[in-house]
View 1 (tube, rainbow, N blue to C red):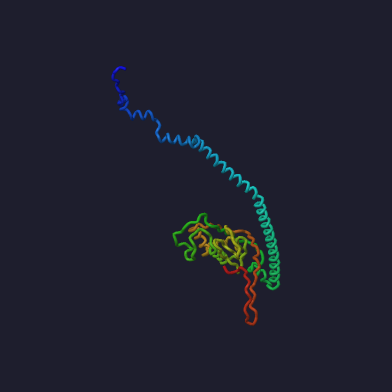
View 2 (cartoon, rainbow, N blue to C red):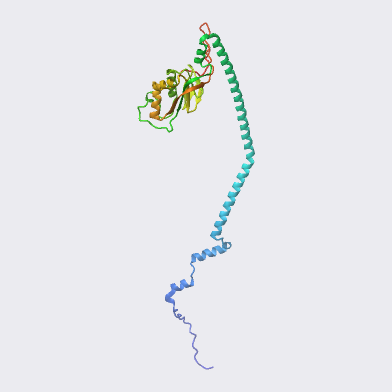
Length: 310
């Protein structure tokens, strides 16, 4: 064996040569990892949870379809409920109509009976007047309104103003506490009727209601009542008198001037004309109040006749 010396192996760790792109580490990192770590994690999580979700437009369409389906179900249920309850409502409505018709027929029958009894009482009153009134029976019947009358007279039509307007003060209603409007009031009608009587009227009616010495003209809210019967404008006043002379006398009277002032200041509409013949119905019979019993006892309770002074 030769005595040649053997060299030990070289165990030194030599540093590898640097990469040529070592100075471009940031650019290299961007090229190697083009997807952001957050996006990569979100994609991995969706993949782990069970596959891909629906696109947003498709999810919106499915939600809209579900809402429409729910609305259709609600409408269908409502229509079905209405169809079920319709026969019951129709039956109740028909029952109400039948009841109204029955009550109306009963009221008409009662009113006819009242008219018949009123005519009978009026006939008996006229017979008594003719029997005990002597030569003045016709005059007493006329003044009491117990008989229908006809003859020459005037026709006066009074109506509210077309539009309600305010006044600046100083009108004919100021002293009576009226509001400054163009609506005809009960006191206006009272003055008109009283003016006709004072001008020579022999008989007066308002909207077919015959007036007597006991007739009352009052108000209930905005309505005018004659003997507790409401009137509806326009108000037609018929009065028997001496034709044109009677009409002229009323227009010259204080109440005729009052009516003209209402027209000029508040727009109240009226027209008056002489008539060759007017017809007035008989007034309803007047029920007398019973006298107190003899001996100073308490009087019997009076019967409410709805009458009063105008």
